[in-house]
Amino acid sequence: EISADYKRYDQKNNVIMRALSGDPVVKPNFDTYFGKHMGWIPNKVADGYGRLEEAMKTGAFAIEDGLNGYHAPGFASKGLYEWKEPQISGVVNPEKYTFDTPEAASKAVKRAAKFYGADLVGIAPYDERWVLSRVFNIEKNDSVPNVLPFEPKSVIVMALQMSYDGFQAAPTSLELASAGNIYSSMGVVVSKVSHFVRALGYQTVPCGNDTALSVPLAIHAGLGELSRIGIAITPEFGPRQRFCKIFTDLPLAVDKPITFGVKEFCMTCKKCADACPSQAISHDKEPSFQAATISTSGGVKKWAANA
Image 1 (tube, helix red, strand yellow):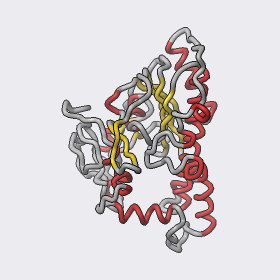
Image 2: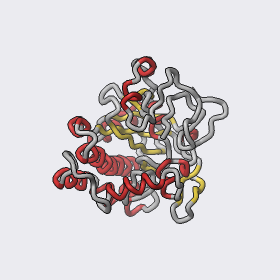
Image 3: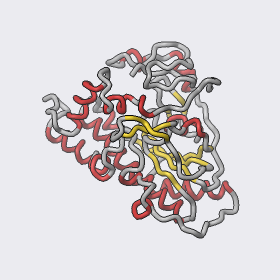
């Protein structure tokens, strides 16, 4: 549900972008996290944070932190997510391939995406409301208008599952390695699918955490349902996946949102909220349209995280 006063999200309000801009409320904690992530600050000496586990994490993040230039906070058009430089993003074939129907096009795209490594694929209709109104520019220390280079017709949304065993090891470097492994894989998969679509003669904007809100797109693509923890729960993997997406002008048949009881379950179960170390997860029985902080988007009925 979306309220009439819903406004598109400005990326400068993202908690990481707030830290990078010097917001004193969040910058100290982020500096500590990022320093440990990059190895500038020694991690605590404890089980799960040894040299071997840290090496696993370093290898997992290699493509994400190296080739993609630490894209995860939501920096657009970097590394394998590049869409502005044809020598990296691929040239759009001037001769368009014509599918018999949008359904046939969707089937081909989904087969290609799974072949390239996506675990789940859905097609969402293009809806400008989920596109960031502005994106944060580090050099200017401010957000600038978010302008797509063409008018998209649909969005290819893909999910890559993270290691179950890695998540069982939380909170340790092995859990972070499972996230880093998928962040690195996301760039590879989304780049391949983007090249595939461009080779068919259609424009693309490949994205990870950037450019648009992944959770509503995943929901509209029929991949999952919104949960108390603020992310999409899928029938296949629960909360254990990362989403990437591609905006395209290729006409595709869209999928329908699904419901399988997540909202009803979350209304009665509050285990995640009770267990949250920072108590950032809402204990409210009902979701609401209210934003918990400047970093959460109001106007959409959900359980907003106080983070």
